[in-house]
Image 1 (cartoon, rainbow, N blue to C red):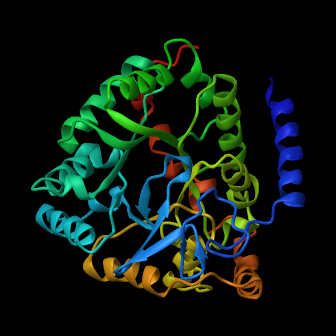
Image 2 (spheres, helix red, strand yellow; image 1 turned 90 degrees about the vertical axis):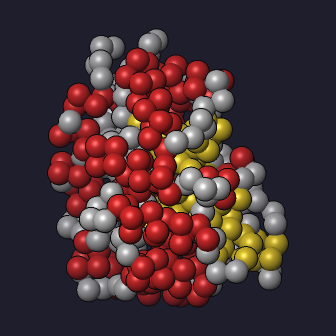
Length: 352
């Protein structure tokens, strides 16, 4: 299938999704994510203490509805403070831990590995990602991540930065990274598998399609979901219905645009988090670099209530003008946010 054929098919699929799939608020009546647990009249989630817990797609795993972003852990100057922050989050119930092989040259994983000692690993759901597109590079990065994280198994392992139309082809050819991930799962190094990307929903759709053709099943997919995405190259409109339909765990990211959406002065941090939580997300990963930001994450969980259609429309109307050109979602339009473009050697062999 060439690029034109795929774009035509994706456009048709997106149109059908828009016509027939109106995504409900998470916890609202008629929610269709495949989870059935009821709590206080809300479907698919359970509140314990300060945190909400949701089901990660078809895995049956319960994860905290707010996740801790691994990139930001590596930005904290004092390693001891980053460890203290991770443990404080876990102690209070924020248990979904995001990371990646390439974050700060491995520093984020090493810090998280230290934080997960002393029994904290058992309390956390640990996810990391790798960049390698060929089997050899991917396998090496997977083993390095396990070493840094000081664990023999991660809960979720994901292909990172699927941002080019050719990325799926490189991954699923013989000798591609899909073989390394499959072998890692068989060896017990990982429980669940997924992929991430932030550039264009068409690339996500192509990754799902090529995986299907190769009988490769994803447990989770990570994608940008925020108050401006609905207006520009929308993952919410084009990709999210497909994930919900196939009961794939939804990992929302970039709810504040890293954090350019806040610079638009149209929304507050809590509104950003509540909007992403209102979608059928399993978890919303957010950057946390200090205790006030950790408190903000818990406040978002404590105060979240399913939004009405009128509330959603009002919020989207506020962001529409600012969102139209992607100015505040720079990760979609600016190569500076593409780590593997700046470091192509991380991808490994490029033969197809």
